[in-house]
Image (cartoon, rainbow, N blue to C red; front, side, top):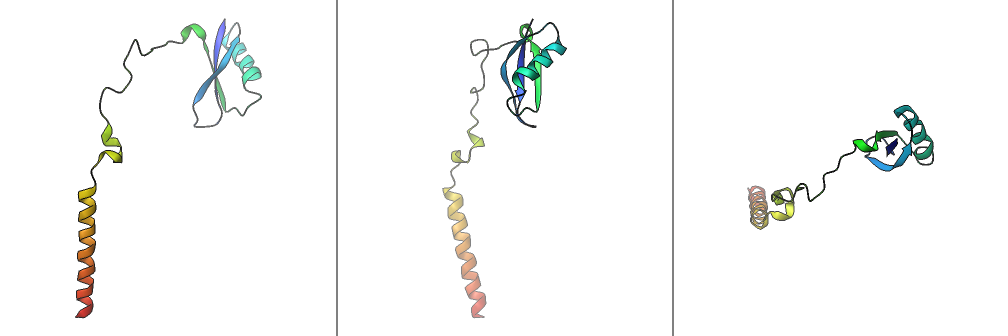
Length: 104
């Protein structure tokens, strides 16, 4: 039986596919995965799963994202000219008010 192996380098990082092992059961697959894929590089954890259990959805079967405009998430999509002018006017008014207070 072929088992696919996924390795995580550090806590909080993603598991990435690093290969496969041939083993009769899960325990042997984990042991072989540790020996073959976990000893040379820093490894936090290893996952093994039977190859036939892995499913796939590709772009022909489904639409992935891109169907809605999410430009509002990026500051580059906003017109900030009016807001910047308002801030500049406000700063100017505050500076004038400070000068007036200093004259009294």
